[in-house]
Image 1 (cartoon, protein in one colour):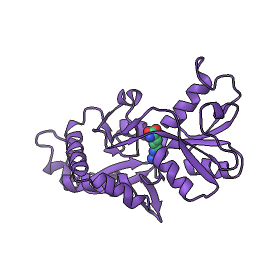
Image 2 (tube, helix red, strand yellow; image 1 turned 120 degrees about the vertical axis):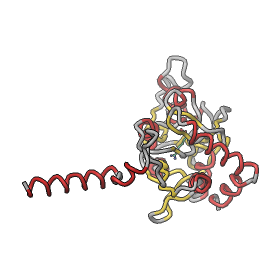
Image 3 (cartoon, helix red, strand yellow; image 1 turned 45 degrees about the horizontal axis):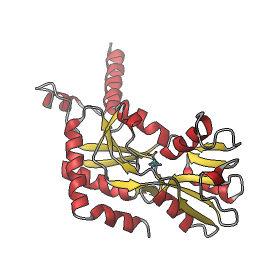
Image 4 (cartoon, helix red, strand yellow; image 1 turned 60 degrees about the horizontal axis):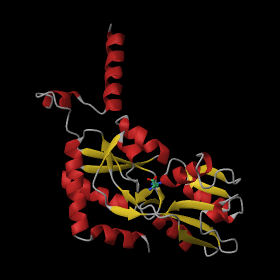
Length: 264
Ligand code: ARG
C-alpha cells in the first residue's frame, strides 16, 4: 500500500511538473471556471529571419523579440520565446502550444482561416537574391532556373504557384523550386552555385546580401505584404492588448527604431 501511495505521489508530482499546474494554482483560481492566469506568455517564432528574429548566441533577438518584450511588459507577464520551423508556426498556435506567433508573418486570407492577426506593423515585398556574376532581376529571368525559398512562406507560395499553376508565369519553363527549412541554408546553396536565385522578404534579403559581397537583391513583383502578430482564433483579450502595444510602438516610432537597431 505504502509503495502504491508513493508511486501515486510521484506520478502526481510528475504530472504537475509536466503540466505546470500545482494544486495551489488549481484551488486559488478556477472559482469562476476561468483558466488559471499564467504569469508567462509564450511566443513562437522561426529565428532565421534577421532583422526580425535571429539568434545571438543562445538568445533570440530582433524586431519581433523587441515588440514581444513590450507586449509582455504591457501585460505584466514574463516573455518566453521558442524557435521552431516556420511551416509549423500556425499549426502549433492552433494546437495552443504558444500564446502568439511573431515571425515577420504576412497576413494572408489562408492563414486568417486558422488564426487571428493583429493590426499590420510592417509592410514588405518579396526580393530576389542572386549572384552578381549571374544576375536575376525579373520573373522572366527566373525561367528555367533553380529557385530557393523558405518552406511555407509567401515567397515559397509565389514561386511554387507560378511553377505549378496552369496560368503560372514559370509553368513549363523548366524552373524548379527548392524548399528549405532555413532560408540561410538557401543563401549558402546560392553562394555554392547549387541555386540560381533565392526569393525572400525584402529586409531579410538585404541582411543576407549585406553579409555577402558577391550577392545582390532586387524587388520582385509588386505585391506588398503586411506583417501581423497571430493569436489563436477568438483570443480577443490577448489580441486587443497586442494591438494596443503595437499601435503605441508605431505612434512612438519604435518599430522603425527596432528595425534600424537590428539592421546594423
Ligand atoms: N513574410 C513571409 C511569410 O509570412 C516570410 C516570413 C518568414 N519568417 C520567419 N521568421 N522565418 O510567409
